[in-house]
Amino acid sequence: MKPFEVTLEKGLSAKMEFTVGEKDTAKYYGSGKSEILATPALVRYMEATAQKIVDTGIPHDWQSIGTFFSVEHNSATPAGLDVEIHAILVSIDDKDLTFEISAFDNSGRIATGIHKRIVTKTATLERLLKKKSR
Image (tube, rainbow, N blue to C red; front, side, top):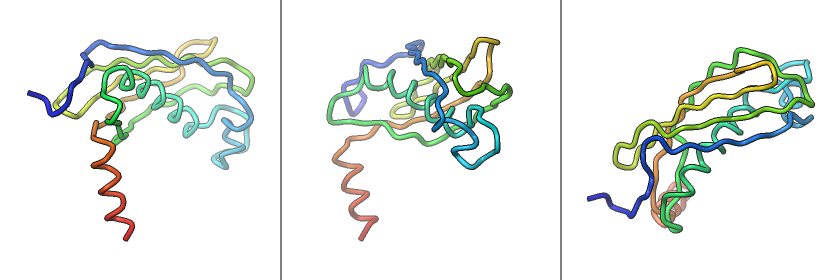
């Protein structure tokens, strides 16, 4: 029996769409000179898309924390273009969740990634953080 009431199951999916803005660019992040989608910004959106899945299936007093991200960002997307992120929950192992995530712009797939999250009680996490910050 799991330590919490969960309604997550393999195969659940979510998507998110956004327009690449100035604050999403490599120039803004300082990771390049061009006004193209920065990899750190892309990862932020990919992670948020996975989080949408988690939010639908854990109790309100639990949360998830990202623990791993591997991304292959292989096509540049200029500022002003729309991007669509697709995430799918591919594995659940107790409190460990694994997602496959892809991103697309108007020319096709621009990135793929694997993302892992763990679920934990919010109170437990806050207690650990308080102890660590002493």
